[in-house]
Image (cartoon, rainbow, N blue to C red; front, side):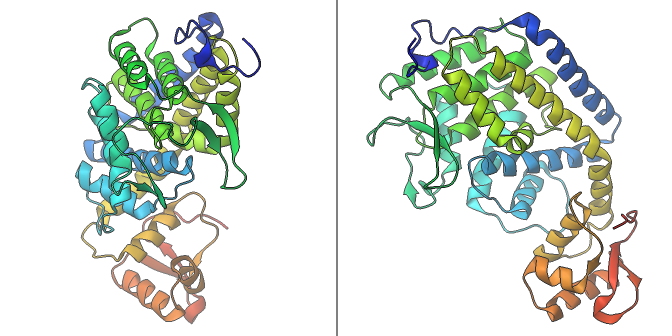
Length: 376
């Protein structure tokens, strides 16, 4: 194969191969980490399990879109998932149709993982991502395969004007047959271990890039679908997309390198398995925080809160919040006036949600009731 060739040009494509011996140790590590996480979660009550899943799925939906440069509203995503999962989180943010599409795709791939994959289901997933038939200002072919009318499909990352081309996908002609072959393998081939198969499915589908837009999100959903079949959990407790988003550059680098090599995809699978292990590890570390958050929302489920108040309270309980909450920080975070911030805070103090730490008018700082204080 010449330098300008891609993996799909190989005469044996799509006969992907890998070194099982090289993968055995990382696979054992990943399986152990995922098993430990699921073991710990199995001791939780049903409500707590749902709340842990709510946080992991919120992260999955937000990050799978962020990898593609699309920023979704955290509260809208969390509310949409809570509505569909039947989890009470108090006040809900208004529905957002773009959020609803990604949520529907994520929940169908994981919650209905046992239902067979078909070309029609793939087309429906992609159509759900573009409810208006647009991506930003661009018209997108929703619910159909791409046609290459404006030239070959190139897989790129980075901001507009500074985009990097990672590889070129196969021509549109014959795509439906290629997808049918992929679906046949996805459903009926039992050669590979489930975790390996999840990595192969992600890579194979992202190589085909059969849609005009939405390919990355659908590829990651396919990986999640196989993982859900493997651990037989209709709910996800760790987010692969959150881990990929954290290592976004490495993700595109390894995809690009593997596209330009032979049919041996061991390097990609090593990266993917390591990514899974780190996602499960991260989720395990976050369990205590998620449980604390879950208990909080349960405790104050009856308090009527505005989307603004929900936003700040979630942010306060997130890992990255620095220092103490005061009136000025509230105003900055919610882009409101100092007076509105003070009204919001006083309502929460009256409801017993916030506790003043030390008195001092507008400079008073506040903590969430019942949650251990973090030092600055």
